[in-house]
Image 1 (tube, one colour):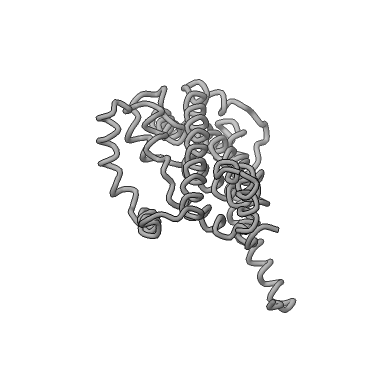
Image 2 (cartoon, rainbow, N blue to C red; image 1 turned 90 degrees about the horizontal axis):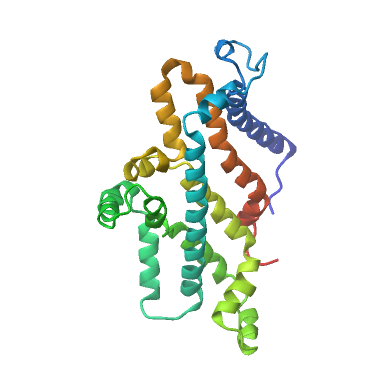
Length: 272
């Protein structure tokens, strides 16, 4: 193991602290502005002198709760589906021997290299033909296949101790029981990392929901913020910051809840 000198560690800590400040300071300013009254929004002081919830009330007066619910519900369902499919596909690629297994896995990896914009129009046409336009199905189903998740979980399953699986098979355990009672409970770090990546990607998605939804009752929070900005004009800066604050909280919450397991994903090399 390479040991860094005290000066190298100090420089590393200084760089890390600087990067953290560059990220946290704008986030703090956005959150503080969300509680400012309209006259205070353009004040030089970063904190509100008379904190108010008026910006949030203005936001929820224009169906923002519907946008928030659509984003939350579709994100949870989509991430759950992505993780389930990735677990099943990864187990098949890691533990089953079948013809063209490596070729099929290469196709999965190849899917990671295809730009989303290249497949968006064909998938949009399919969504319209199936009658899913302006529905949760359009937001969830076309994105359930998650090649990165299959790749990540397959790599971790390949490292799983084979004698443990052989012992379970000798005791009469089925593949289904081995997967859900032995392998998955020991893959917490990998699954946590996958959940964070999938959640942030889905929660922050803007163009696809804009393309496949048309009514306010199906819009997601990212589109709702943009529509509020367009409709309210120059007086919308405070509510806009309130909307950005609310839109940031779920992703931050998921990360902070699962961060320890996510770090373990990148520093562990097997089951401890």
